Structures are given as C-alpha cells and as structure tokens.
Image 1 (cartoon, rainbow, N blue to C red):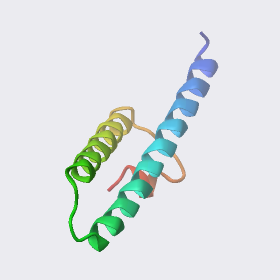
Image 2: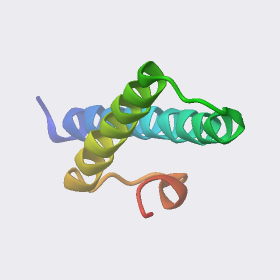
Image 3: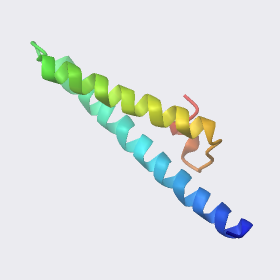
Length: 79
C-alpha cells in the first residue's frame, strides 16, 4: 500500500472514530439530563450508563493513542 493510500485510510478511520466519539458524548449528555429528571433509576439504566461510559473511554483513549487530528477534535479528544 502506498504512503498516500495509507494516510488516506488513516484519515478516514480517524474521522469515523471522532464521529463515533462525538455521538457517544451526545448520548452521555442526553442520558445525564434524563437521569436528573428520573426519581428512581433502574439497575438497567445504571448498567447502560456504565457501558456507555466504558465505550466512550475506550474510544477516547484509542483516539489519543492514534494522535487523531480533526477540525472538531478540540471539543472531542482534548477534554
């Protein structure tokens, strides 16, 4: 694989990773608002919150490990 193709594939992968991280951030924000309005949080909701947080943490660390760069990177990976 040529260097140009490798760079292009990495950029596409990085962009997809950032898009997923951004979606997870939005889901976390929505879930946090939902949790604040819920009087009694079920065990299923607590487990779902932890899974969502684990997914976000894993992908966030992967983006940092890959030195991912993007125009929306400041809001996603530099928390």
